[in-house]
View 1 (cartoon, rainbow, N blue to C red):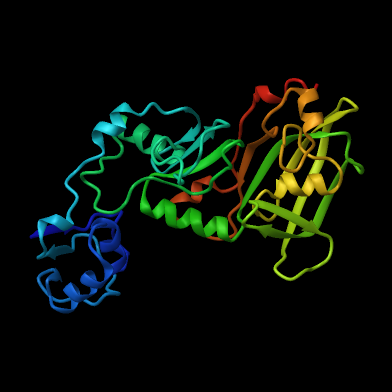
View 2 (cartoon, rainbow, N blue to C red):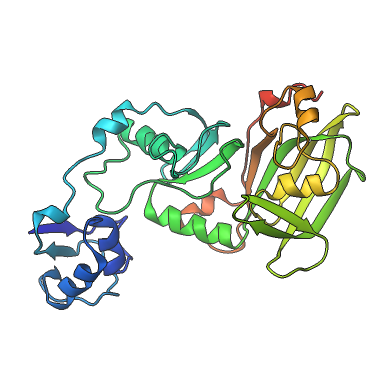
Length: 316
């Protein structure tokens, strides 16, 4: 028999959702059956699948030990060396400067050396996260950037922050600004582009259409030229919508691909500039809440910015 006492980061979840995360080896079919047959109880009594857990609830599982993972992540977290700079940090939130080349979340090729794992290791090493004491929650990224794009990524230290940030991002109450170096000089010097994006999953590529098309998603990209050398320009781009490869594909669609972009740009130009990855950086973030943000209300109207980004030094 195992038991979990519901902590603040676990409260508010449905019972079945909590168990899926807390007991990963337990098959869904057995989970549902165990709740029906009272082999899983809450506060000593049968509970419904959709019961909303409260802080202090006792969840008891009368199941075989084989379903419980007794391995811990502490040793791994001690070995991980976080590779990011801190833009801002408080008791709820962490803004990190992700370096190009580091993947945000695990994928088929990389399971552990990710920004998400480095954030957990950083918080573990400073004593703010203990996986043994947390039943189902672990610090999580609220947004992500492509492997070869650097910049500000938001990490939530607790469940309430994660919930609020996910909702605010969904409602577009955050303004995200990027710096990018493009070929040539866009005309006009500032504009708002509105088009339609279609993603080709097999090619891992997107295509831009100027008129609505089947499967197309509306995209809005706002840019302004900051400075230009004639054959290259440094632009600030604000994402009004956030789609896959939106900045890279949208700027290329108007004849100004990002320098270093092998997918949407031109390799001969990239070689001339000596760039193998796109010059793109998520450098500024503004919180602009439309209504109550709970424990994060103090962030409203605040802007955080990375002041010095070396990859753009050549665009002077």
